[in-house]
Image (tube, rainbow, N blue to C red; front, side, top):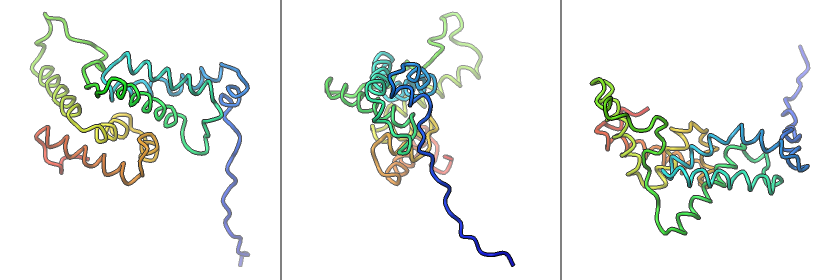
Length: 199
């Protein structure tokens, strides 16, 4: 019989990623690596919440400027870089909205293709139905209250893990799960589907 050897947890690496170590030394090449890794996701998160391409670009820039100015504030042991940057962008969005004293509605700024030319706007029946379905979906998302819209954007559109989404939203994991569930229910009802049809 083999002797019993208790299992021990492997040691957690405390080594910083190379790009972060470089950034902390003042090497801006580290910031470029971070931007290539997370820039688009942070921008799309801000755009989906605000519907304002200029504001989304501004808060994305603010997030990376904050990282460049204080790289020691990002701790990889506490969460992902994407969650950290999205959290900064979220706070910048909320600050901008408080300054304007209103929430910005979501619009069609997320549509990469832009409006169809007048001579091809009708398209085929299937294409027209598809466009109407997408428009109805985004109209329903726009109608969601902020906490539900944010939860839906983070989990269903950006496909972030629930733990990361909860960190970004600044809520407990169970609260985030509840918000996603309620957002999906409201969305299904708004689109004329029952809650059971949701994943």
